[in-house]
Image 1 (cartoon, rainbow, N blue to C red):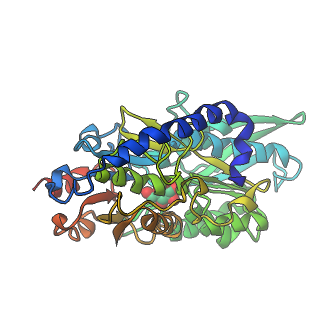
Image 2 (image 1 turned 180 degrees about the vertical axis):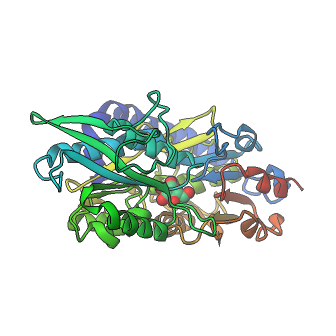
Length: 430
Ligand code: BGC
């Protein structure tokens, strides 16, 4: 509860309304639970079983268009992620605020140009695209229409001649600085794994070897890559580094000069990932324990913790900026959220078996933050989850391990590539 207080003022109205929703809804939710069909899925065919896509939203990796077929695979299909645009704006604003607050010392070589480098996670992933756009938009370096600026990697742009980004001007305390994206690249390794932290560590070494004195800020689409660059170079050179995810190691590094990160409320997402499955398995209203309190007292606040889009069949957790001002409240990224920390009654929500995969067992965010949270919530929700870790490269590495879907009551899927939903739905349709 404590860390959410930062939003208290802004969210006061929403909260009042939504808390009323939690309280008012509990009676209707108990009548829902009373009618729970605990055996619903056991007899179901695989194509009718609850399915939750998470973290990688089924979509076209070139255009970003949502894959509505995958999102509507059956009546119990949902996506759980976070609000990528709201988070991207926060990340961009966090960098601008830092520059303004530190204008007297940020331009390390005093050439009047504030130079930054950017680590891009996956050029075909909506979250990554939004974050690149968010940073470029806030800093004024984006090219193209608002909301749709070019998110392509710029390569190196030390002379400011790139067509993908442009130089911007920022005035602080009467002094005008040029802001330049000196370099950016997709951090994909030779085997094809994206968001690759080791690749980001190599990139910062290459960049700093030729234009290190011009780099005043390091920005990354996530903390995994951000921490790799921070540890390889930025920390020793006192260059602020901004990431995304609020993994525990990155939050701790704020004490050592890491500039800041964004919490994508993984505690809310991990809960929702399993909760939508639980509700479908119990045959209760989908809002149970989400916007409407369940019998155990679990209830989130819509508008503060998440938003739901019926059209996209998607739950989006809301993001919070984590900086030197508040980081101590985010120290443990694997701690369950106190609003939804109550054990469900096993007589009404009996044990069910879930197949769940993580696209890349080495992904920092998913392995160090998301999966530990899922493991905390599965007990509370009486779900027995088999966790499958992929290699981050091929879908078949994962689908090969879904040999017998009939063994499971529900599925939670994290694709390697957002275009590949059919690789899974085909298996469930057989
Ligand atoms: C996270 C990244 C992660 C990616 C995996 C993003 O939402 O911020 O850290 O690598 O998901 O799909």
